[in-house]
Image (cartoon, rainbow, N blue to C red; front, top):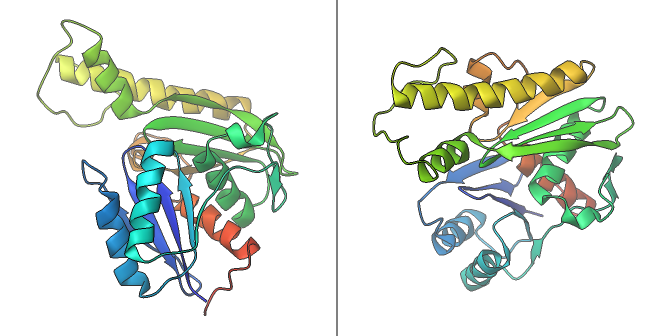
Length: 247
């Protein structure tokens, strides 16, 4: 049996075929996040009507567009997933479990199922999230703050004189242009937030995912980089639902 897992974020769609022991991920980051183009490409790669599991934080309207596109492409078994109260030993801390961002849940699940123990899971995407998992699988809570691009665009949109067109390399050093000052400030905020959470939870192993994880690691955040962590968690859900990996 084969299947597909799809991770729909706010600025990217990632997906992978479940065919063999390893995920085979593809990444799409067009400005429009064209769901029809993605659905057609997934169909061409899957080659037949296989089960599809989706983790999406894009909202009901855009999820409806994706559902319609997948159906039109030929998929008849599409499941949009939510965060449960517990799964594979991982326990949700939210009073209403389904209100947790499903991407956070699957990132934690992917990390937990491969490295059980105290964990700090950082997803550096459109938002920067830090979630703590105890050694017994209990979610201890987390932190959510704007991601790097969101901090930069918010600063430019809500101020009159913070304006620049030049690009600058990532650095924590004090800047001598507006662009360099903004980049350094944003990076200090993100790196400082993660460092503070780590300081309070030294026994937790750090696992990072998300588009900005590599940048943060290059600036001194030491941890394990797992770029497809949400897809790994989705694959666990697929197996729980009865998916059998073909090896």
